[in-house]
Length: 500
Image (tube, rainbow, N blue to C red; front, side):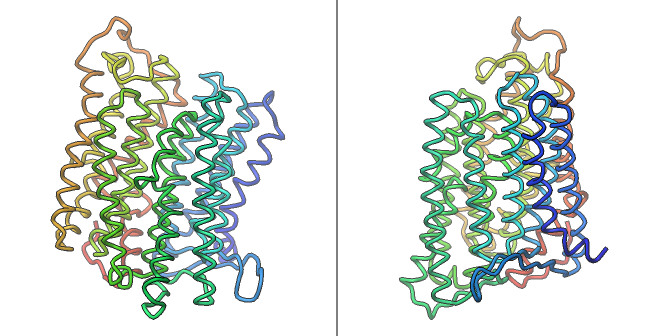
């Protein structure tokens, strides 16, 4: 068992990589077998990740050296609380997305389904790889694999518009990648190490110009995927991809890779002390706060449902960035837990948008009058996700936002408390009217009960329940809250004693 546990990080990466090969070899004609590979890989991946939770919470760190490129430079895996939190959330939600995607792709008669499922598997391999990266070089490698593997999913529609948006995405991704490689090389040249260390390993003796150059390069590299303004324009445009891509990759994996990068940068490269002393925390907090408010205001103007959700994602990613930038334990705890709660709530909303589109062909908010009478389960789940993102109690978003707000007070930054409160009102303003329109208006197009297929509705219902469970008992499933606490304890030295 010990040998299996210590091999689990690599197995969690490889299982979906093998599925990425098996899916296209099986082909379009044997789609039941092809889809079985996807589901089996998602179940095994989650099993490998979940078996490490007890050990990591007990202080165990599962490590593995993969390849030594040169003396002191190599690829390595290390499972710590930060990586485990992201990996557990992403791998669990991939199970639900696998079932949902099968229903979506078949219901919409989408083309090139084998390529779609193959690249989705590659993306999940890369995501788990960067979760468990033991150093910056390994992180950047998997980060770039994730960027490249996302491209075929963005252009899946095969239209001229899709290719144009794909080119835009590549420009952003390549630019971010160059910045990360440059920052990584600079750090190694100055320190001789790239290994992540809780509390950071850079020091003030390197000089302000060097430290700010490193920060600038990594802020660019991670800011692209995290959607921090003004680097966010690719993300709403990428909603042209099929909804399962939007749901998992743009609400859970790709964009979360960006905010996870900031967690690693602040907590494991610079360290909260140095990051605050040099003033970088203030700069990052200002950009994040501006992103939260501006993205929410833009979301209010969007009639396209997925576009509205995309700008909501831009704003909520910066909740996490702002929480990390505040540097106080409560805010960092809220940021870590918001990675999970936002994933559950936002994937629910994207799942609902996809079910509506596949089943009714409707894409616009203005077309949804009375649709709650036709699809009450779908729109009911949408309502739960909507009020959760607004910060209403009994849904996960309330818990993470509570700690973010308390952290802003602890940091003496009442202006950022105001940002959290105002953005909560804006969240309600652009999401709740969708629910009231669906249930309290009528339309001759939406009368009798007629939900989408069970392959889509069941995952929607499960993610809705997850959103509620995270709000009612934050540590009740996979110990997400305890893992979040362990992250903050490792980075800041603060010991939490109050549980959830």
